[in-house]
Length: 514
Image (tube, rainbow, N blue to C red; front, side, top):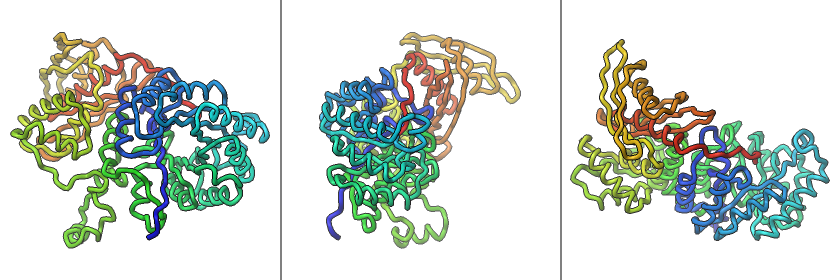
């Protein structure tokens, strides 16, 4: 086979992915994900939209300071204030990129911008020139490119490349395109824009019709050299092109696409788990590549084929995406070194302090469970990544409850290290009683908008993972708790969300969409 053409992976989990309702992240969480993306091998990290809020600015600036080994990108509209603010956040980056955008479709020109074609071209050129005067790496996006007249799109692309754009991104902002259309747009740009060889063609597809990955692959097939995507496909409305799906499609079908990425695919599952834990957006069981059922086989015919030859029903090896063949490995007699090795094999990089906390929790769990599964280790690891400063931490509970009776709950917590307790007889069942006890003890009144329980592994002693969303002051706050006791897991999840509320608001606004 001839040499494979490289395709850059532009990850926008921290910018477009965070626009998913309820997916806002704090600075610590963004830095954790950014470091995981570096280990994954992404070429560009879009860290945020610096002008959107002080929180977004500080997140981009912190990632620019601390992340090395990849390009760090910030989004800006085509105006001087946005562009200057983006550069201020990015200036410490090892490899900075300013990403400027301006809508180009007829519907946006008429109803949103109220600008003529000439005015749009002039502003786009001015924005790119401003950015290029500050940064050598500049990307331009004609927002809603998929619905922009092809003649005008070619005109804009040629003008911004002349102005200094090094990457031209073609967004399907509202998920309207089809694969045939997207292929045609990229092919037309390559054929009709005389200076197109001076810039990388990128593509940014949304999944409103379920075609984001297909459209991205069609663009690559037509010659695009960069794909913009997110972990688990999260993002605005129905989400973005899924990084893990487009990467594994290019790898598995390199015979068709003739392309390769620099992604370390063994980091796909760990990174997926990390993002799901931090954002609270769980991965569906049947999700391609990283779902729990992606490599599961229940049908007898499939099982028989797998036993005879794996390739009969699997086109990828689970190890290649970060799943382990062996599940049962550790017990209560295992040491710190064995635990650290297992955590590394599952894709988690822990500091010495995190490892010590993990080891203590592992020993406590091993005393309660007969068998420790990889899923148990992953759940314990993820609590290290998702940990926030705790004003309230769970210390214990006592419960008296009977069918049809109002429960009595004694809840014990540490409030800034000081033991406190409250007893309450209220609620419709034990979980509601614990929830009301937490409200009384903390003084923080909330509305529970979502409550989910799932088993981390299998068996009657499996750990329960509880995730909650609490509304307070018009904002949603997520919490997560894990324990072999589902009520304890519930209390930990409620307290985790309350701790987020106690930290105070993290002001941010949603930017315009690309």
